[in-house]
Amino acid sequence: MFDPRSLGVIMTAMITAYRINKNMEKWLGEKNAADTLSQSVPNNVTSEMGLALLDVSDVVRKYPEVIAYFEKMENGDIFDELPKLEGGEAVRDSMQAFLDKYGMRCSGEIDITKTRWSEQPSLLVPVILNNIQNFEPNARIAKFEKGLLEAKAKEGNLLKRLENLPKGKKKAKKTKKMICVLRNYIGYREYPKYNWIFRMFVYKRALMKEAAKLVEKGIINEKEDVYCLSFEEFRNAVRTSQLDYKIIAERKESYEYFETLTPPRLMTSEGEVIFGEYNMENVPEGALAGIPVSSGMIEGRARVIMKMEDAEIEKGDILVTAFTDPSWTPLFVSLQGLVTEVGGMMTHGAVIAREYGLPAVVGVESATKEIKDGQRIRINGTEGYVEILDETD
Image 1 (tube, rainbow, N blue to C red):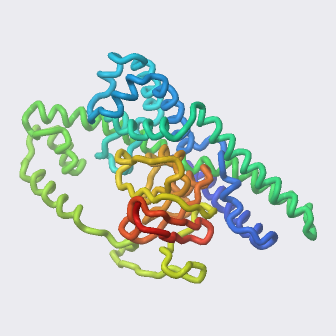
Image 2 (image 1 turned 180 degrees about the horizontal axis):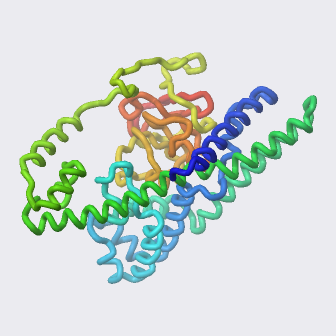
Image 3 (image 1 turned 120 degrees about the vertical axis):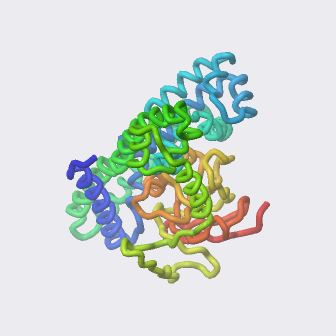
């Protein structure tokens, strides 16, 4: 995680994507060519996660009893019930294999207090049911191959057109090398965060063992109370078996208040709040402006979703949400577009949207308020805007 070469790989991929886009627009008049070239790259641990859950869904779809249980289940330890059902052990084993590799992830995973998939596997059930509804068996292979074919076709098309230009062979050779660098390096962008979150979950499990001891001693009421303590305060409580519980009560009350606040979109480390406006030159009147991060134009039904576990996605929907992190990407396999209120060119959602070939616009201010669930919208991931086409269904 801290080897300087790690950031070097990420920056090489970013710079290469920038150079490809700049050259293709200059030489061929084509915008954001690197987006298509980034589809189905090898060794992207986050996009592989979404595809791996398709494999889990294929196991679940074989067993009607398990599907019926998942459809009516409430939050709880699903692994206790699964072995009682026909096919339940096979489903449990498949889900456990997935959790062994990805179970430390969750929505808002950078916050160590958030519930991990391994801690509550039922969080994955809505996505599994969506996959069963929206895809045929073996969709993982079909989806990856489709993206790979599109990337190869784009590469062949660009190189052929470049060869017909003045000094075309030299330009084509240079571009082919850059495409090779892009496709080999861009997937690595997801690994540092993956390893970081993996380590954080190890730390969390160790910390929560100590929290359980504090509960047994009657020092705190529940393990999660330690979330309101600094690390040093937590350590002192473990060492001395003493704690003024009023600290926890006061901080819980403060947290409830802080949750009602809306932070500024941009703040410097000195506390200065910075405001700005989008360039509206290529944005139609009435459209919502944002940052283009994955090329293409698509129309579809907007699904405004704030929590991944609440998602009921049909194939072809456009996800509209405040933000995404790697835990959201298993939903991406069912989508045809993405709109978020925050994000940038190299945030996780943008990287995976490009790899899956989804048009995406991020940084759309108040998108979840301006766009209503069920409305038909058009997103332009090349120019960076969203148009609302009709009222809700």
